[in-house]
Image (tube, rainbow, N blue to C red; front, side):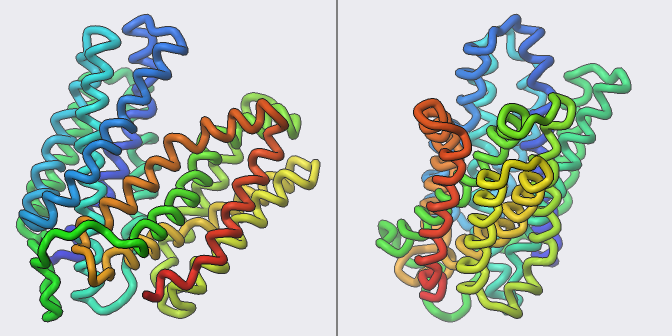
Length: 373
């Protein structure tokens, strides 16, 4: 049994599955004749499905263990991806996205809880590397689906091809997942308890970091285009620079975390990310904005993995419940944060709104000691 390899591959699966949807969005819009407002509401269903399912995923992993929850939810992701191409109307696409998001949400919680147990079993930091593979999967999923579509593969056929790849991962790795890891502390089958204040604080910190990531996804290109004079063809470089920096940071993160410690990762990483936002918004030069976005990616890259590890070590709450709570709050930040940034930007400016994200990251730095508890 090789739970380390299985964990790496399930993180890769999650990244591929989620990112494969992105190149399909324009096809869905054109096929169903959706206007921008309707499409925006339909796309929200994916996040709503994930957020609604995550608390249930915590209960399922606590009750049934990681192996079957990861396996079944992984199979549901494989089923959901082709359904996105078959929806007959906006309502059908919204329902398919709810199902897809819920399946991914359960996988997300279960794989992170499993990763915490693998870390305990191996006795060394591993969470950043797992999340790095999720980032690699995201790049591979979006690029692979785009390549299939570019070379003339039918939309449904492309989705089925990706699903078959994901099905191979689930089928070959199912037996390698841990049910749960019992380290002798008596917490492996601890009675169900509501999470305590420390878990909610970790969730708030995760919410801020996910808000920063959501700001990069939704607003970096807009900022470069309208605040720094980039043309439309190059405005996407900001998010690309951020994504590459984050992927590299996570792939190197386990070694860095083992060397510096979790508290330093959160304290220094959040300050580096805040400095990146300040650099991008306060200096009126395009290259400085790109450099700032690279700093955001480097600084934020290992904070969420460290927060998940800390949540999984809470002795008063089972790992599944704690990680479900932290993940749900984090996704709430990613969903609601960009909209809040838009309201602040409308009332003042986008630079001020992004500087506000930097201020929240400074607050994360001040709370860094929570990861030691």
